[in-house]
Image 1 (cartoon, rainbow, N blue to C red):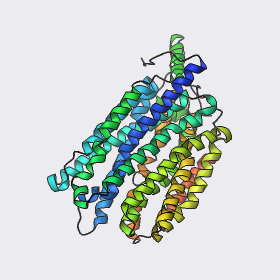
Image 2 (image 1 turned 30 degrees about the vertical axis):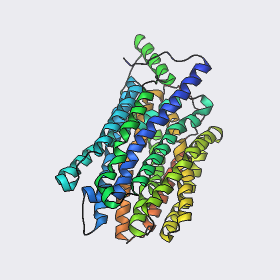
Image 3 (image 1 turned 90 degrees about the horizontal axis):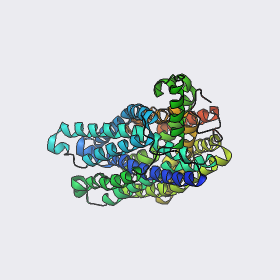
Image 4 (image 1 turned 60 degrees about the vertical axis):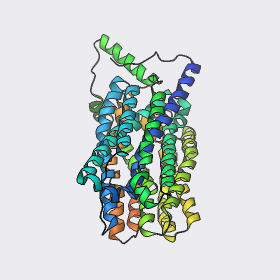
Length: 452
């Protein structure tokens, strides 16, 4: 039997209080999880190549190998989405979210203790891959659950605003991860590569403890409790034909699932241009210092903390589709100038383009995804649907930094193919958003038998 923790609140004041608690829990939890995930991406660009895949003759080969491991984590995400999605739809959002946070924290902390290739040879790379798989499995169930906790508790006219909180947590995690790596990158190379790189990973233990403390205080959402009550009533009247959430999702929600996947693909491909690929381009093909790029990423993420909320709130007024389409067009418009400015080695403009690309381009599409995706699926399959929509495209997205780095190596640093592919993926997301129904007035408590 699912543990619903407490009866659904009946008064607006009770629901508002729990909605604020759920939003904060989503923000803090996702901040911790994405801090853990982002430091792996940053370390892949800066230190994992020489530490775990040393190649003195051609350092870019080591970076390629590190990004291949980075991509491995994305392969595990869909499996995590299926497992935790099923668990969250059948037994509740809370336990699934606590489990993902613990798994992510343990694997990240252990990365900070791993011996390097110099110490144990190929076993170092094997252990890094194992920890990365655990990270990916945990993240596969994290984002969907955190989004649902925020959206399902939110007032009907503020689901976009409340749904932006897990995205704000993403930006906070990015600020912390890039900020800490910016500090340790100031160390001399011998200290950075011997012990300095471990600090961001070991610090995750403190953040995980804070996240778990907050998540243990959560109760199950009203939508989940209502769905469970309806299912119990159906069982008692012998009307229940309960299906596995995954089977029900494919039977009744195929179109929303495909549209959400397309939207996620464009957003994620563009997002990693700012998060990792820009840093790789700068590190290998310009004279801009790595610390400057990490600071630019931190500033951009700092602005995104506000723009995620702005775009989520604005989508409550004008609709999710309109905001998402705007973000896709904006992203396609800035991706070419992004690389032109980096190649020109103009530090001031680099700060500007990083902020515009991430805070507005990524902000508009990513900020509305929790509410938009949640509203596309019925309660019985919502955790599974949202998680799969976000994580199945990750199989492609996860190897995007690897592919982009390979393209840079093949073209001797020409970023044109990367920018063109990014614009094409943003176009796919735009078309999918156009074809999707407007959902900002949908009934979030609907159990759902058929796609809207």
